[in-house]
Structure formats: C-alpha cells, structure tokens
Length: 280
View 1 (cartoon, rainbow, N blue to C red):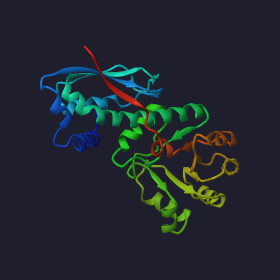
View 2 (view 1 turned 90 degrees about the vertical axis):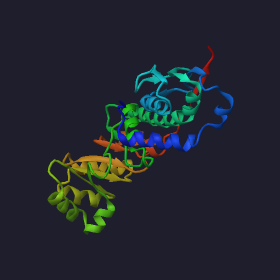
View 3 (view 1 turned 120 degrees about the horizontal axis):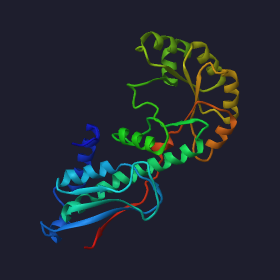
View 4 (view 1 turned 180 degrees about the horizontal axis):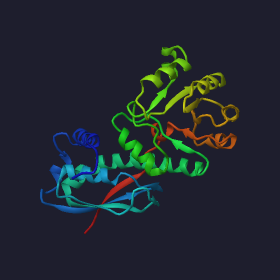
C-alpha cells in the first residue's frame, strides 16, 4: 500500500492520464508486449534527493510488475552522475512512465535543493519558513520537499493556522479589533499571528497581544528597529521579497524568530534528472 496521501495519488493519476492518454503510440509501434528492460534514474547536476516514492508510485500505477529500487535516501545530497534509482519491468511500462516520473522528481528535488541552500545560510540564526505560494494541487509535495531540504513549513492551508493579513485588518477596521475578534472566536490552542507593514502597526499588534507578528516588506534597518521595540513581547517573522541575494542582510541586521520565503516554492528551478535504458 502506498504511503502517499490520497491527494498525491489523485495528482499522479491525473499526470499519467494527461501524458499517456489512450496509449503510447511510439512504443506500441516499436516494442513487443513482452520485452523487458532495466533503466537507471540519474542526477545530471548536484541536488538534494527527494520524491523517489512518488516516482515509484508513477511506475506502479502504469504496471504493477515494475520493480523500483531506490538507491539514495530522502534528503541526501547527490552529485552529478549519481544514480538515484533503478527501474525494471516491461519496456513499454518503463517508457510510458518515464516523463511523468521525471517531471515529478525534477520539481520535487528542485524545491528540496533550494530549501537546503536557505537552510545552510540561516543555520543557527533563524528558522526559514515556506508559504502557501505553491503550485495548485502540489501543496503536500511542495511542503514535503521544503522539509526534506531543511527548512520549515509555515501552515499547510487556511485551516491549520491563524494569520491576520492586511485584508483581514481592513475588513475588521484595525489590527486591535481583528486580533480581539480572533481571540474570541478561534479555537483554543491556536496562536494568533498578525501581519503589519510599518512600525505603527507593530506597536498596535504588540498592544493587542498577538503571539507572532509578521513584518511585511520591512527593510533590514526597519527590522532592527522592530526588534528593539518588541523587546521579546512577541515572536517576529520577516516576510516579503526575501531571496538568496538579500537574506544575509536580514540575518545580519537583527535576530528574528522566523524568515518566510515564498520563493522556496514559487520560484524553485527544476533540476536536471534523466532516465537511461541500460543495455543488458
């Protein structure tokens, strides 16, 4: 039985359906039904291994007799030329699943690889969080890849965390009013986080008793001032426009509890992974 959640299985089935359609015309024309083969899945550049179970599921959904052998651990750093997995079975099944399996792996490993870069930069200085800026339908996979790379998930969706953003504040008539309403209506056990876009908003959020305050689009200098104003009365999260090119400036400016980076999932480049048939 697959260890993947139902939403990922549905995504895999949809991906196979859109690629395979009514059948693989090329393989049907060229290959005998009983021809068997073996292939390797290989990294073509340095990357963080992630998502091999998804690739296994792709081939298994096409042909239950395919044998998929993982050769690298999830989260392992691999070099260009390293073999990630071996696949054995009917040649038609191997070729039918090749592109779909690689599409998943290239995206998942790409997110994990980028996550590792951020985790190493921030190690011991802050916690790097992701966001909900994920590919629609890919939320579980994107966030799994972030964790595998070494960063931390913020919230999975709207259902498992309270974050009062600017539009909530506008609808409620102010930060204080929004936090008060949340405190009355949110189930016990949930902390309240509120987004602010200036130091006046920070003061209001501190007065409201919010446990976490998101400093949205603050400069490094403004973050340093915010830390001095806060004096530990709430946990601080920095967000907005932070990437590999400027995260160092924020880390140097002041110690905050979290830095959230939407680019972990919305801008992670796919990595180069290939499948090659091995001659017997």
